[in-house]
Length: 271
Image (cartoon, rainbow, N blue to C red; front, side, top):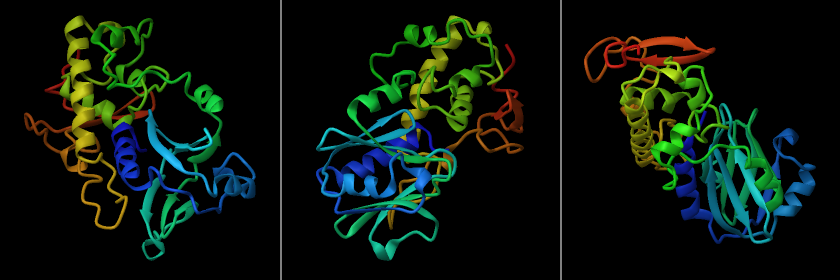
């Protein structure tokens, strides 16, 4: 599932291509992907101008000139592609937005959605999301307070979007590795030193992953060489049985609260 770095990569690339552009056509092939009657959804979009593209957690928001927002959540298996008709992806496309000769294709949105919301509806949709991990106003002390009263495994809270927005299975494991903390560590066991390492690791991993296009390798446009660049840089995620890049010990794949976790038993000792 796309996480913060993947969605931020999309945001950057979309901003370059559609900010200030008019939606000239649209189509919907799966009714459940949108929140309105498909014909109503299409008619509401034609002629609208995308002012700018925002990201909130794992969501994209396309701000329109009438004050409404197109909210995109890709969920598991979803992706976006931008190109002309000759570049049409050889996969099921649920939603298309046309900008003249170029189109934004919403692909594999069996669980994902593209909703058209008013400003008020969008605010309400996201008011229960936790803060952004890279918000400059977030300090290590404020970060620690987000986990106050929690007693479960660290990974479970890191991927809880109500605690902090945008982190999923991949980056929770990568953050824990860089912080030298095992993902199964119980929240109450963390001391100030671990919280400081965790906070710094969260920032560095998410920035590094975004700079390298995230870990999901489906290109966003023809000739895209950035998207997915972080996959080869992942230290533990989806690397079960491979040698740790830091010490050579085999990476362990296990389960925590029904979620896969990957960690190095040597570099991430039990607390």
